[in-house]
Length: 323
Image (tube, rainbow, N blue to C red; front, side):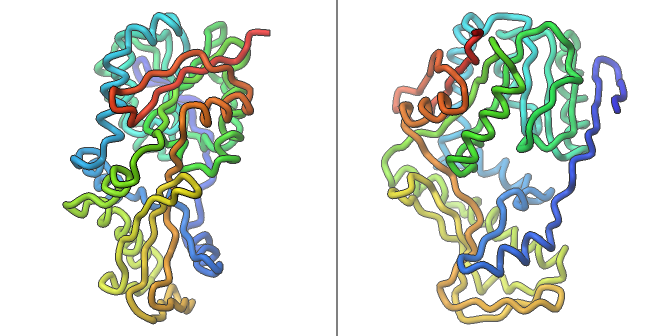
């Protein structure tokens, strides 16, 4: 069902809320304990993540922004004007601003699972771009994307910045991109940010910043479980542990127990050995050729790629063949 506010249409598809308690207990019962990274993003976690993006060691955000700013006109020339621009996981709708003036889309479709956050971000963007038709959808973008609510007759372009694709396992990343292929249809496209493989020291530093902001982001997951799940994690009993796993081509983030201990989560007892970890996130890194192959497997055709001078980050544009 849609509601209208000024130039904004809002569509609430009532995405199923994750069961924090059930998923935590399931993850902590496994041989390699794990918790899905989606649970990082409570209000405090989201605020800490914004600080991570400003950390001097965390090159991803500023490098991608520079690529988009420096190449916005060329990107617009390739894509063309007056498209329908779709952004799964739009968050605060900030990165898309780097494209709007150059691309001049006819409509913009931010998608996010957080209803209140989406409404706030869409209203702020609409106020700054009064010429833009905004169709905001509260939806779980990891599921097949149904864009039937969107205006018809426009070329559909998906925008997926931030190297968020790196948080998917590779097979799941291909599956997500195949959903995008189905959603944008023949002649549609996707502009996507992808972190590149690089020197291990650069990667390790990016996820272990000197100020400890990433560590606080990781540790906040324990605080959230204490507050929301009646858990009794001793924060001094765990430490942030992040490293580049070269064999798997990914950064891994863990919370490592510093001693043998037992945690109580709403009367459920969880045992930790000293050194045992909770695996909280992966961030896969790809070469340009590796990622283009994955996109082809999903049904896209590579059109262009832009990188920074140091080859830290890439922005790809793919299209679905018209025939």
